[in-house]
Image (cartoon, rainbow, N blue to C red; front, top):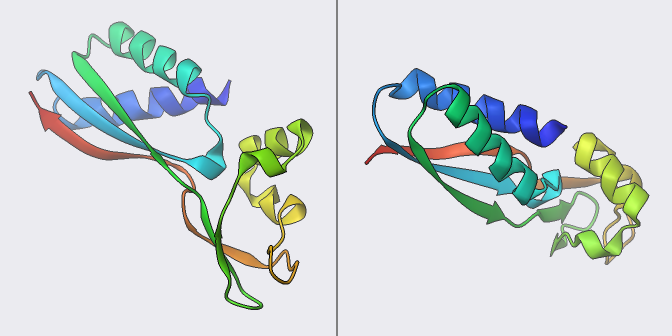
Length: 127
């Protein structure tokens, strides 16, 4: 599962920073990535245990904000506008969003993701 690979990447990033300290790790999840947070948290817990990393995790959801390159309209992405198949496709290949999402004002599929794409470690603090 791709949530497990993302969780493993977060743990490896944390280990590079402070492998012997107890850490508080803040992770940002872009909404467009459509990560299953429950599976992701389980992956974080299991990989942290495997690597003997003492950490607490805080997850922040970042809404997907899109901007039309045709008419400059900005809008928030809503997963509810997609079928289950479309949402799953975007989950694995976010670039496919242009195939399934169009500007609500002019209908153009030519847009830029302003915010809410990807998964990243926002902050690592020593507790």
